Amino acid sequence: MAHKSREMDRDGFCLGIQPVGEIDPGYLKILAGSFLGELGIRSLILPELAQPDYAFDNRRIQYDAGIIINRLEAMEFKGCNCVIALMDADLFIPVFSFVLGEARMGGDRALVSIFRLQENRSGIVKVALHEFGHLMGLDHCHENTCVMRFSKNTEQLNSISSMFCKYCLDQIKYSIREKTKGP
Image 1: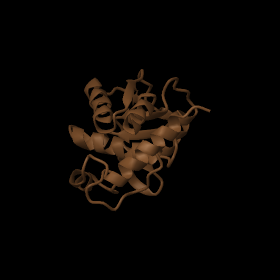
Image 2: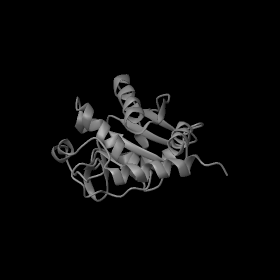
Image 3: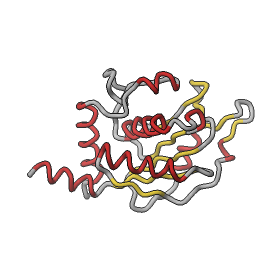
Image 4: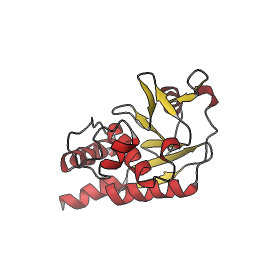
């Protein structure tokens, strides 16, 4: 019986998948299917947002991921507990020359770039699942078989799993239950 109530809690959770700029609809559908398959949570593909020119850094010729997340955090997404934005642009945060994704630990907005992952659909899924893990309060994992393992480039990303280890998966299920509890 406990398993059934856990499923019902996840049924109340909705992840918004937000295209930023022009994104191939196939990528959006793959992400939605991956979250349903890996975590049993439903996704809502949201209407496209304009390219975030406000976050473009002329010196780096990249987009500042933190500025974009700040803007996403200021937006309301009705019916979505969390939102993962997907964009086809090179991202950075001040301490790294580039990032494949960015999320605030325990927050409700994340950003994934497909710019360096063109045609690497499994890589895009791994980055999205990884950033979702951060939204659910997970830090980097030391398990070689966990998608929460830190990867600083596409080579390292390709070597990690697209699944969560048992510990991280249990933490995510707990966080989803907490986020879907009523007041």
